[in-house]
Length: 117
Image (cartoon, rainbow, N blue to C red):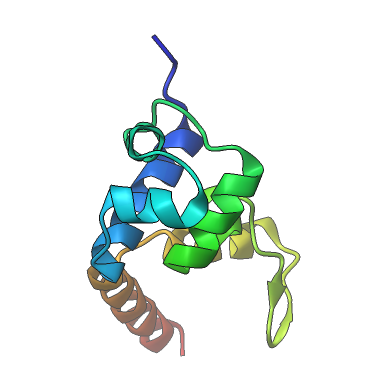
């Protein structure tokens, strides 16, 4: 049995969420990216990792940020270059949250900002 890794789980979750957001089936995605439904299912469950060319096509089709699901930190912020490890961790944490989690995170940050002013 294949070992499910953190990256495989992240890829699977991202594909599952992308399919739901696009109202697309695994079979439809497979047809678009040149794969099989069985392979897509294996990616979604985290049992296997798609080859880079298929993953790239999946990300483009489902509008998924490949760096985020591969757990590669984004080092560039449109306003400045982020260098500090703590800043990168907070940005990664925020990027990994769902919409409700982001709202809570931002609300908490606003409360902290009021406390330190």
